[in-house]
Length: 307
Image 1: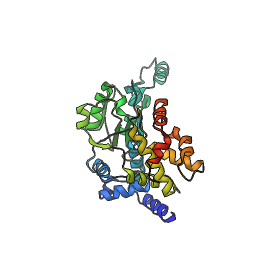
Image 2: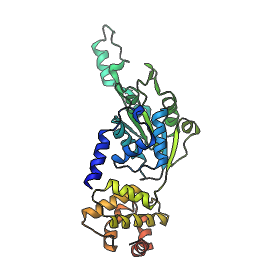
Image 3: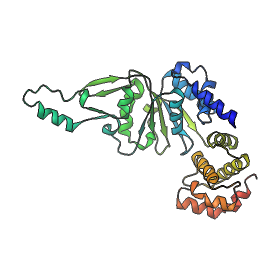
Image 4: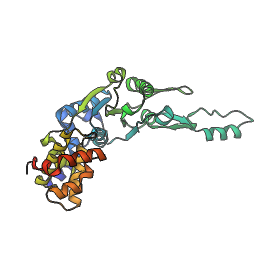
């Protein structure tokens, strides 16, 4: 255990600060694993191409499979600033890109009302939001996470096209602002709606599926310190059985980790009926899904898990 964590710490100390220092796909795999993210070869290749080609990466997949975490770990790997835009219905330019400090503008107009010399549409009155802040980063390329882009409407998605293709933003009062350091852009989507072809053409693409048993065990080992192999196997097996029940919100890897950590906090050494019932809220995220699991029978599900 001590050697494993020492090697992770050493890998973090050697994290590159420049994408050109990432020499191959194996370096990406090692760097992500040092931060506790188990990266398969296909996703590692997508991240490597993001860095070397400078193209945005669109990641789609089920909820809770680690899409957002890719951007977070990438920022740690590069020792770069993480700038996050959380998308939602009704997201507009004022919240995502910029707005003017109207109170400051009004005060400036009042102070200079006689001379009329103050230019109120200038940099000093500009309030940066995540997208503009990413474009105007001065020291190095940040990692820009545009999270759950499928929640934003099509008009906002269309606005993004200039940023994703030319890494610039047009502000009517100031003109076009181009990135001094091209940000590393990661977009995530849960596929609540289909994204436009125009957006997809500007991005590399990767789909993250639910992991198989061995991959999920690898994730548990990386993310949960001191995990017992037998208990970890029982939890992963149980969650994977639950995913087959056609729930409205099937548990992702995030729920597996929550369940595992909860069992450790509760002092459980095996996943029996009592432990599974106590931590069911870590896995089922709606009353209907909980009822489906109960109807299937927790004991019956546990009996199908390798002990």
